[in-house]
Length: 419
Image (cartoon, rainbow, N blue to C red; front, side, top):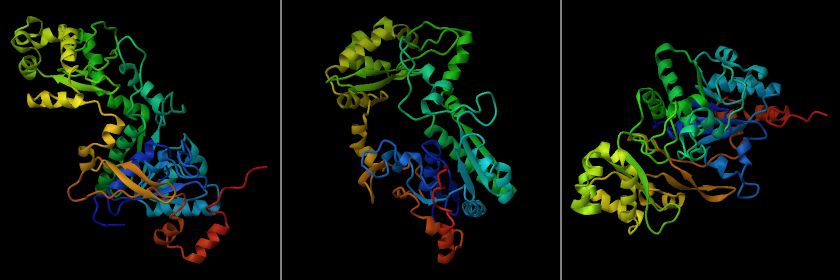
């Protein structure tokens, strides 16, 4: 491992699977941590989910597990438990997202882990936390969005609630967990002791819809003037593409009228006159329906109709160029194809080509965190158990004969099926 990265010297034992935990550990791997992905002999379930190439690790797995080493350990085997104990002694962080009670039944709950290594940070992702009426419930991405307030505030006013395409329940929780782990590592520098870090998916989704909680409380003092529809109950309504801030905003359709031929425009107070001049000349500038922001809020349906009519003769890129010239904040609705071919994305190294021994060339997202003294090198995800011997030797100090004995004892193989 290189020693010139931001998290060089930090070793993470990553027992997480699927998306939320692997997102967190991958980011820390990007930043230089030595991430050891500990898998059962069966492997992370996502290795085989939604496969596009037979017998190859799926994109679901490869895109969430770059910059990691893989070791397989049978935690139901006594020798496997011995290896796991030694890994806990050798790591700074252990991460898990098992169901409630799983690690306790294996003998590795937080109290036992802390006794093995008082300096270790144990980081857990749960659907709803370890306490409370929902603690034993199962959670998935969309369940977390539903119960965290995101779905009730997403979609159009008169339509059904909608999940967002951004995985705020899984990946959003992973980013929160990374913040907690880094904070615990900093505190350990002062205290010398590790601690337990927990992030619940429901809690993290609630945090990510913070401005909707702002509006929830504003409703007790009157209507929300920036919302297009002025029909309110006691809860924050769905707002469609309304900006959600003090300024009006919306997605305007452009030519040729395809599913993503839209430009999102924010009509700030100080740009209205220049925008009105460009769209409708002096007549629109002096139109009393739009003279002040209060007027534009009250008549925003008509304002958006005028802007849509103007946009109908331009592509989203052409309109973006026109509006940028007069400092109107705007951005085209970018499809995945748009982004995959975008020069800005390539310059930012956010969509990278990698090579994989099973699937060949493929693409992964880069690291969104840019550090001037710690450039990120993205490396492919590991094959199942690819680094088992390496980790046993380099990290735990086992020699070849000892490793062979552990293999013979079943430390890395599937437990026999019960008859």
